[in-house]
Amino acid sequence: MKNTFTKILALVVVLMGVNSFSAQAQARVQGHEDDVNEIFKLGVEARVDYLHQAVAGDKDVAGSGFKVRYFNVRMDGQIASKFTYSWRQRFNRVNSFSEFAQNTDWLTLTYKPTKNWSISAGKQVLMIGGWEYDRAPIDLYFCSEFWNNVSCYQLGASVAYTTNKGNDTILFQACQSPYDTTSPSVDYYAYNLYWSGSHGCFTALYSLNFMQYAPGKYDAYVALGNQFKFGDATLQVDVMSRGPKPKDLLFDNFSIMGEFSYLIADRVNVFAKATYDKIGSSAVAASGLIPGTEITRLGAGVEYYPLGGRGNRDVRVHAAYAYNIGTNTNEFGTALGDGSFLTVGVTWKVDVIKGITSLIDKRNAKRAEKM
Image (cartoon, rainbow, N blue to C red; front, side):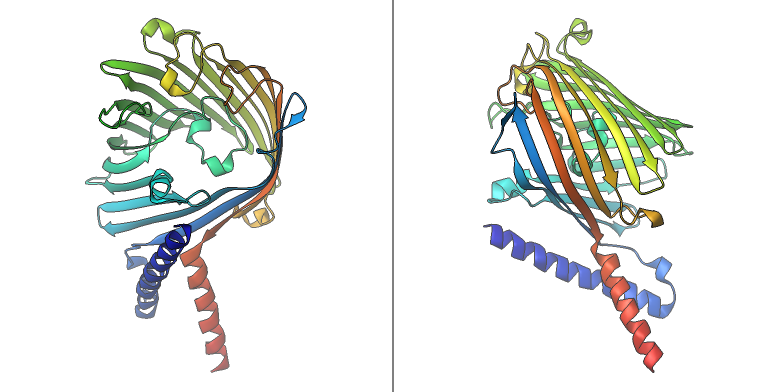
């Protein structure tokens, strides 16, 4: 089955890539490349790590060693003047059709009737506030217990309004609940109100979420993601509170995530990160967060961009370490008390169509020089 998926993907890439390149090449010949409606953009990204995980000094053999953490393919494009699409697929753990569908992060069609309004439908990112949650998984090394348990890609629809200046967006989303795990004959839904706003050095990612976990019952989130950026220094602080009742939202079931990073000479990024999860009696079992958990993760790391001198982030080498303090009552949880986590690895990202176009342009230029 895996070979079948690989062949299908290769065929799609070749056919769409050839069509896209042909349109771009024809436009260059005719002298109006900027008029091309870019139907197909293709990106491939991968990350390989060496991991060493241990609990109370005992090595976790299954969780250690060389791992292909991520192998993603992303396709984006504009199929008409007001319609765009986006698809991202993970391929590092696909052995069946059901896993293939499950590993589709998103597959979304967006209609933008005006500059301010947009309507999207398909498999989408569940719109929860916070910077740790917002960042691409391939760019994260260790995360909060909440992050490791949320089912963040769901079928649904959303409508968004962006101000004329473009620095504020308000979005409403209705989608499948991440707690929809009980019965295939029962559908649970989530309703999410989301605001992103950028004002000077401060950027917010805030949300109010209602996740259905039983008929007529909802788990509410208040998620406040805050970023402060001063030159090459960035501070991100997230505060999230959860609970099925308003009184539960206060200091019973919550998470705090914070990261400070500093970019040195455009090539080296150093960071320190801390997360804290307290899972109180109000926690919904379907969330995967078990009451009695109170766990802190402390860690730091460094990223090196070999091509960073030109502002290029396509290749990255990283090393990061984290240590866990406290108790996790979920024996299958990610962050276990007295646990340690070390990762060393490399990430690369490729714009396939741009690369092919560049190679052919160089070949044509060399041919022109010989003529």
